[in-house]
Length: 208
Image (tube, rainbow, N blue to C red; front, side, top):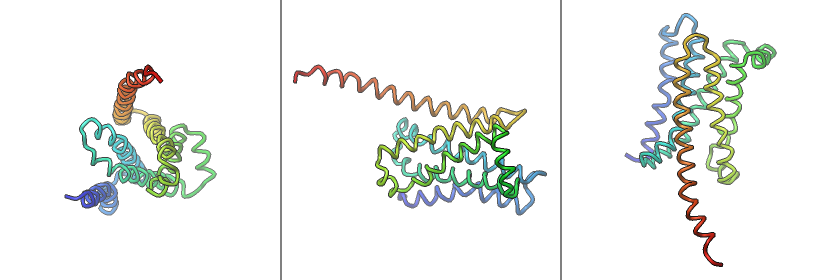
């Protein structure tokens, strides 16, 4: 199966949560509070796709799945897509574009502040996800900019943790997954640094 065909399957799979949400809405499968249900479901899928995008590099390095990197951008953009749905539900269905109330809510409720911060951090990443923008920014600057995804993921998990009042189990699962992904990345970084140190020392000791 070609990469192009696999991408089509991945794209279709990423739309399944939206399809299920629409189906529940049409068939009355949402909870007694449909706005809250839509908000929670789109928020969950935002975090899931965000963590899936962050998992691509560790999986590629640990398992040797080099081809998986081809789908990272798509998964990341779907994380932004569900974040847009999540925020739109809040803006349109919760507050009906009452921006004065929305601004007060962002300032006064810390979990809203964290969630909005995470969304704002994702915006430049989505806008610079094309190959043309990578060439325009340059690889090094583009990589530095896209490190904002780590802060966005932290903001998303904190948003969820501060939101719940009783059952903190689900957000703790997301926090644990994010901690593991960060841990693996740190391990890669220190392993690479340790391997490079003897080479640098040997080069420095060579006579000039």
